[in-house]
Image 1: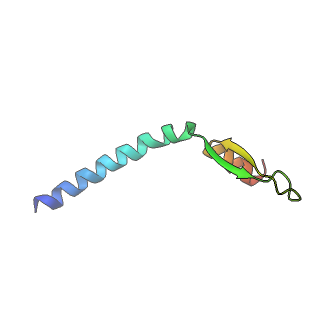
Image 2 (image 1 turned 90 degrees about the vertical axis):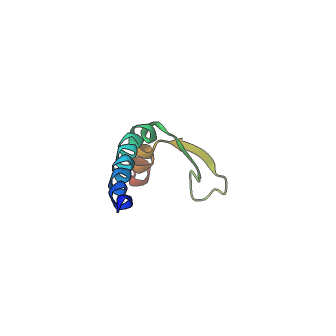
Image 3 (image 1 turned 120 degrees about the horizontal axis):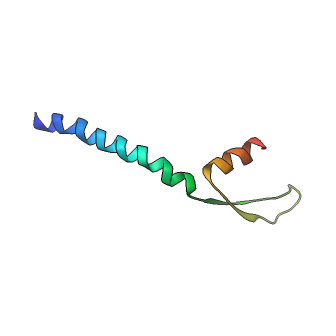
Length: 60
């Protein structure tokens, strides 16, 4: 039975970690290779934050 009681505590710890994580992930850059125009075979490396990629994919 004590194992069952410890599981919610572990879940609380995970939630705290997840709450802290977005602040760190916000500044983290994600790099991808993309084609600047569809007629080119050449790809360029572009590094943006998660929010930047969301805007990029939406055409903003």
